[in-house]
Structure formats: structure tokens, C-alpha cells
Image 1 (tube, rainbow, N blue to C red):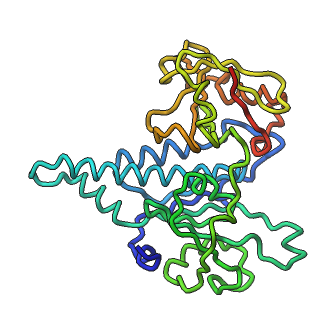
Image 2: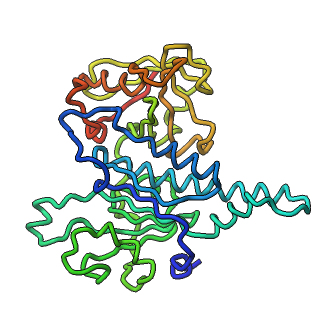
Image 3: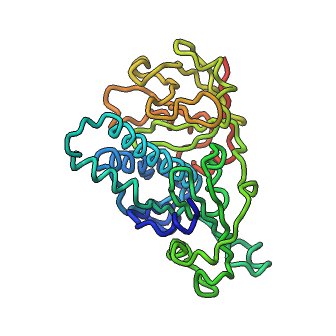
Length: 331
């Protein structure tokens, strides 16, 4: 399918991850409870309702969440497509269920994502640039992602980008000198002549072997592994492994299990989420979780355990630490 055809599909929803939303982050006094669980909201939205709706999420305190968000949306689109294929294969001549019709319309329409965090630095000032340029990726599932280059890393590492374009700052996509470009960048859908084809090789790679990619409201952590194949000898259920970080104060011993309920009460464990891509090579996620009977309000969760292992006092901790913090898993 050519990009012109892709951009003319009706827009079902626009999902925006940006530093312009939410409160001004108090980085010197970061509170982990301020993390918003957009993974849960989007997943429940799509699986229960069968479709996407417009949403906005703040990532100012942790811009790398935008990279995770783009991968999540692609995974949810793939889930929808798989469900349609499964339902079609099981069709028995009875009238199509109304919920399936909703799902089918969603798959036929466009989901548009914006990931934005591009502070204008002194380098932009010296070079008379209006911030980092936006790019747009069309993925294997048909998702459209408008973002700066760093936020395509997860999609590119998984080989999910089908077409990739640059949106030049001086292309006329917005008024000259427009500061709030992220508010109108998706209007390029109706003005595709401004797009410049770009090689995906300009996208940064996943530079950490294991990184903290996401944390949910219960303090459960998603670790992104650049190459799962390098860890297979350690990821055997029943093993215990040591999770360590460069410059960290101490390692963390974790149980390797098949699912959350296999972790002993009060202890931490690692496992592959059954909802994730089952591939055992290439990039993928691991769940790092402390199992407790009542996770609501539990303060010694897995994320707090990781923060403590950095040696940084919780009152001054900021998730910006994770972009520099390489983790390792060993026997």
C-alpha cells in the first residue's frame, strides 16, 4: 500500500504522548506515585471496547516513555488484527456480532500517534533551528507515528517500520517559527507533498542491553532487553538470577517464573508476560515484579526496589537516571 493511500484512511483516534501535558515536573522531588499507567488504560480500552479513542498522556518527567508508548500501540494494533483473523477463521455462517463489527471498523481506520519531547537547546539557537525535526513512520500494522528520532528506537529495533519520512521544519507544514508544532503535526496527513523519504538508519539504536522501560501503578516494572537471546540460559523458570546495574549499590536476587502467581509472597521475580510477543530473540520485555497479596498502596514494590539499588535517595530520584543506567542479569 502506498503512503498516500495510508494517509487517506479515516482517523479513528489520535494518541498523544508529550511533555506539554500535565503538571510541571518537580524533578528534584520526584514522586513515583505521579506515574500514570497509560499501558493499562490503552490496553483495557482496546481489548474491552475493541477500538481506540483520543487520549493524551504526559511524559515530561520521563520522555523515554514515548518510545515505549509507540511500541505498545503497534502491539495493540497487531492484537486487533489477530483477533479479526481469528474470528474470521471461526466464522460459522451466523451474522457477525456487533462487537466484531466495531473491531473491524477500528482495524480499517487509522490510529495516529504523536510522541513529542524536543526542548530547544542552545545548539538549536546557534544553528537557528526550530527544535528537532519531526519524522513520521508507517508501521507494519498501519499505525502512523509522528515523533522525533529517539522515539522510533523500539519500533525500528523490532523491524516494524514499513515507511519512514522526514517533515522538514521549513516545509510549510506549519507557519514559519511555529513553536507548538506537535499540536498540528498530524495535519501532514492531508499535505503529504511535504514529506521527504528517509532511511531508517538515522534512528538511534537501543544502546542499553537491558533498560527500565516502563512502570505501572503497582510499581511493576517493564524491562526492555535489546536481545532476548543473550539471556535465555538465565531465563529458565525455577532459577534465581541476579539483577544488577552499573554504579548501583547492590544487586537484586529475583526468581525466574512463568507467571506472577509463581513468585513467592513478598519476593521479586522475572517473567515473560504471556500477552507479549513470544519470540525469544531480538528485543523484548521482561516483567520485574514483587508479588504481594494487596498491591494497592504497597510501597516496597519492584520499582522502589530498583530505585533503592541505585543508591539515590528517593526524595531526589528522577527517572532520567534510567537513560544512563545499564542493567544486567546473571546467574
